[in-house]
Image (cartoon, rainbow, N blue to C red; front, side, top):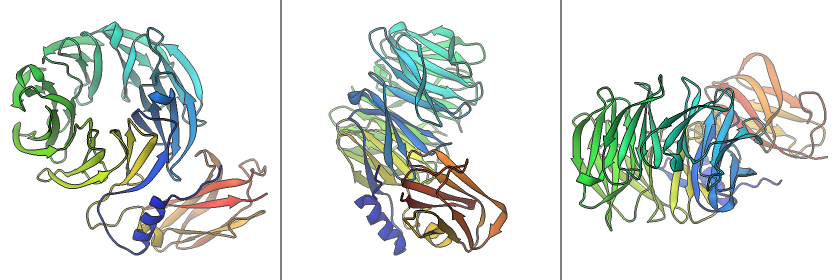
Length: 466
């Protein structure tokens, strides 16, 4: 495998080196097996993004330090993927017409290590407190509960007809399940695995958002052309916020820190409704061209990203005043969004193009965390590079404590760790002889040397020749 920086990455580097602060921009695009990238999830241990690709019947893996896809795992009709950070596993719902199952991916080697039947399996959510996976079984009108430690179904909860989306209320230990065909929301108590309330909202609900700061759940109530606000404690509707007549709500997202919820409604034209979650009032609307199917808040900047499927672009909204800061053109029909805060990025999956786009997630006028500061404070030098027998890794640091150098292969797997005897301030040098942890020579190729320290981590691509 040959790793080559893309033109997007080279352009981004130019801006960073010259010290020009700028707002969000598209910095890279990554080839994936096919279109219809429906969901993505982040493996925090390996620094890898997994994504489902229905048109290619597979799950791909992208190594974030290099933005290269290195794995394509078979999964017929792959729909949803989530990551379990406790067991370092990912789960994928796949199959159709009664053959639905969950496939299990090993988070270290990125291979399929198991599969078990879950009829009707569709959307997934992982709950870390109980280490359980909740699965909407659409054709069975139920929610399956999976014990992640043993990869087994431990409960099957009857809900409404054709459950689709599900959202966690981690504050109260509840799960909201949107039942598409009977226009209801089932509320499940996670401690007992029982439905404690069913609320009629009408229409075909398939978008929702739980605002933890105010303990409220927002769901479309299309029968009344409104957004229903459900109180997290009493499990009752406490407000109805009107939107356009005969509209369809495709996406709801929010920023808890700014007490803002954005809800998209589409009726020939698309409008984003800005909701103040403290008073439950509509205080502004934003006209957008084409429908929006995903709204995600960046944990890095707090900005809201809206995947404009109908406009082939991503809209970036500043939650302060719900102001649009920019519109970024990407591939055909952007659909899914995934933040990678450790890299200051937002990954964008599309329906009608075999690419994942990478947006640099930064505030206007503020240098990116991967930018000038990292280049000056954590400038990693490898000399010689490429090399055959050994290379010297140097960290030209000004105000950093380094603790180790981790060598990863192009798949993101750690192959060697060079520990420092103590935290070493300022510059240091370390020799790597191209061997793994057992002392065996590694094959020729590209490796990533990651210098672990505070406050950041510096990386360097190193090429081994044989």
